[in-house]
Length: 273
Ligand SMILES: [Zn+2]
Image 1 (tube, rainbow, N blue to C red):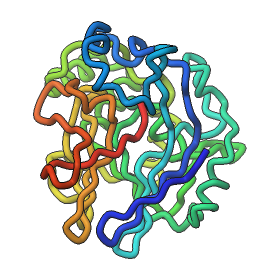
Image 2 (cartoon, rainbow, N blue to C red):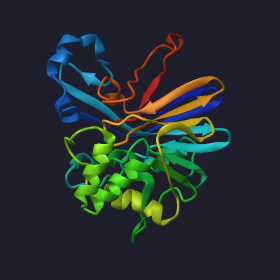
Image 3 (cartoon, protein in one colour):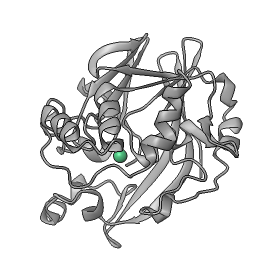
């Protein structure tokens, strides 16, 4: 696995990989997608993320490390080690040297100031916490974890098995019935300990700045209130989010895509599934 470095204005962005997944079919990830669309539009396919010959999607699970205005910011925190994910064997009880890779990128856990979550799924929030032999505790003890208010409320409702509350949130989000629900246990082991430690900040993903130069842009569809995260520095902008959700699958408000800088549109940096 390799680490990639970008510049966005005066900010630096480093990709720290956790794992690669290469065995998903397109229909597993995008159940509503008509396969004929792929046959009709081969030019839409990015060979780095989809192998037409094997009909398998290549996914990267990783964290983005941003150094911006003197602060260390992570976007999404991967799967984590030792997490109990019996329904998702490829993510179950991993033992990856992710923190060593983070250290190679120059980041010690206590140096992280903020963690920004695009959404609350098993492969995006896992390293929020680690098992200390007794319980799940924050991996990054000084970091404030920022997530969408709706994503949080949805996790609370599902964890409490409050189907009425969950259905009401889905109705508000205008995304219809879910194909599947978030993986059980993720919210309890990777989000609730953050709140219990007083390290959680919930925001409305309405495009307002949550930190200087950083905005949460609501882009639901992949999850109940998925946020695409915009970083602006010195006149340049990058948007981090779920690339699979950026190809016409977001039902309202936003369609994002990778474009050339001189087109006036934004580059999109995918953050996995
Ligand atoms: Zn996801």
